[in-house]
Amino acid sequence: MSSPTPVQSFLGGIGLSLPVHALLLLNGNVFGISGFLHRAVRGGKEAAVAVSGLVLGGAYVGFQEGGGPQPFNVGVGRLALAGFLVGLGSKLSNGCTSGHMICGVSRFSVRSIVATVTFFITGVLTVRALPSDLPPTRSMDWTFGANGQALLAMQAVVAVLLYSWVARNQQPPSKEDSLPETQSKSRLLAFFASAFEFALALRLSNLSEPTRVLSFLSLPWHPAFDPSLAFLAVGALLMSIVLYQGFRGSEKPLLGGRWSVPKGGPIDAKLIAGAAIFGIGWGLAGVCPGPALVNLGRALSGGSGILPSATWVAAAAAGGLFA
Image (cartoon, rainbow, N blue to C red; front, side, top):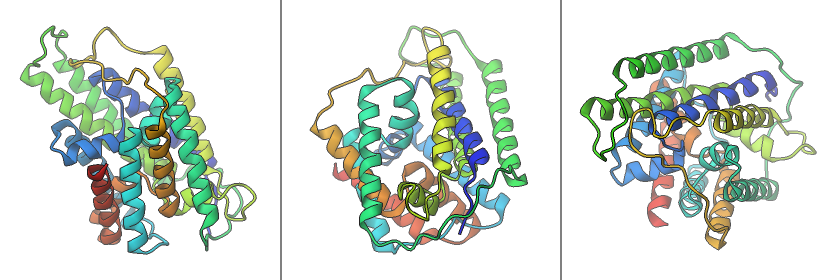
């Protein structure tokens, strides 16, 4: 039994939007975690650095809290199926909760809005269709405890260190495709630091807790309904919209390279099917790529929950390869 955490989740949502926008301004990249995972599996260097930032951010959380992630309330077989479907669906629809919901919706991308609505619907239907032993929620917890404050403070420290490095090492944008070595290192640092920050904000927001996700997807008329993630979405989307629409950056990313922002595309069967499959996988276990990688780090650091966390991540990677 848990209490909804509106303040903590709202602040966590804001915290999620900041590294997302930082990566866009610095490197020109959309913060799509499923894309990071799929490209890392295929040998993408920058994507692998981002994945490592999420895992190590989770490890830091586990060290700070002195334990592993919240235990899953489903078996390893169901976790494997859930991970595979999330990996497959995110590859087909080219996005997940970070890429479509936070990044895409803040750009007012119709494709991302359609994908987000689709995976929420199938996630809800999946949770409602399956037997559940989710505990009823308690009254709202409006506090912002010491653990949340520590996570927020650490996120601020990482952001300050990143921008201090950028200020010292930034070079004029190059017209050539190749980047100076210092600039390439700075881009890798931006991937790592923004992912590390994102991991801290995920934990702060409680999106890393599968039971809370499933409780949210159970809808308000269920006694287990937990509205925390609604507050997360409000915080993340409001801040992301303000940042993207008001502060889009210069002609080129600050650390060189090219803008890698999707410019729309057809709303076709592949998008709808992929988002629907993603939602089913999400509803089976309450996990999507970002929280899974963070919880893997927490498990490795805390020494518990390693097998289920690793199973989900491996299955998601396999799903992406299968697509």
